Amino acid sequence: METVATSVAVIGMRHLDDAEFDRWVRLLEERTGVIVPPERKPFLETGLRRRMRETGHTRFDAYYDELFDGARGAMEWACLVDHLTVHETHFFRHLPSIELIRDEWLPGWLDSAAPDVSLHALSVGCSTGEEAYSLALMLDVELARVAPSRRFGVTATDVSQAALVLARAAEYPMRRLAEIPVAYRGGVELLPDGESFRIMDRLRKRIGFACVNLLHASRAPLRKLDIIFCQNVLIYFARERRGEMLDALVGLLQPNGLLVLGPGEAPGWSHPQMRRVGGRQTLAYLRNTERDPA
Image (tube, rainbow, N blue to C red; front, side):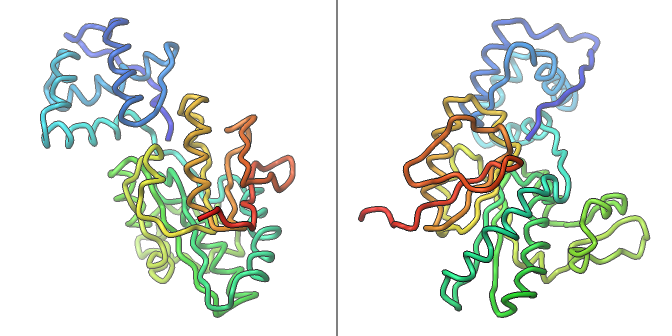
């Protein structure tokens, strides 16, 4: 999730003063965990103005109050979150992390997991679905090659309902096809318009999308996971909160489960149940084989 990076002036609407900015920052942190530092005030103001213009509001305080108006406020909050985020992502965005899963982690998992056990992965902050589908495209090919009877599933979460609608549709402009390595394009189909492609149904059925905030991920009804892919999400949270959220994610992992983060997202983090794996291009941790005490 990335904050909006453009600024627009709206005639007839005064600027967001420092006191109001602080109040909006507190609300965002309380509800989403996202931190907006003072230097990003123009970005927050732009997102607020855009949504206020659509709803006919001209005062920041009146719009703020509306967000606390029961069900109506909850629906408006969901719309606002979409205006404060840009869902820019790519297929196979960080190839070294995918290669780590494929070349280093997956062979060991196949050797240790019982033959009838399915692989379960979680894509955190999946945006419009590219990350989740990248995992599915890779796992589909690699498991078919070395363990064709093995099944897998991916749960993908994001805070934006609008982004998840696009993710479920799984249709993307043709120019995005170049992001997918040729070896993994067997899971996509070209659409009749000649300008777009879609992830095939057999892979779409393996992915479940859910609106979940990373702050509350540990409370979600998720089964124990083998892979948690969480990249380009933690950077929007306060450093002291990142550790708390990562500790919660550890609790969702199976023994020998893999946690994959974006390089540089969690410097200094450690956990007694996790050990660092992979090379310098990746940031990943493997959960110890010992199960937690009952």
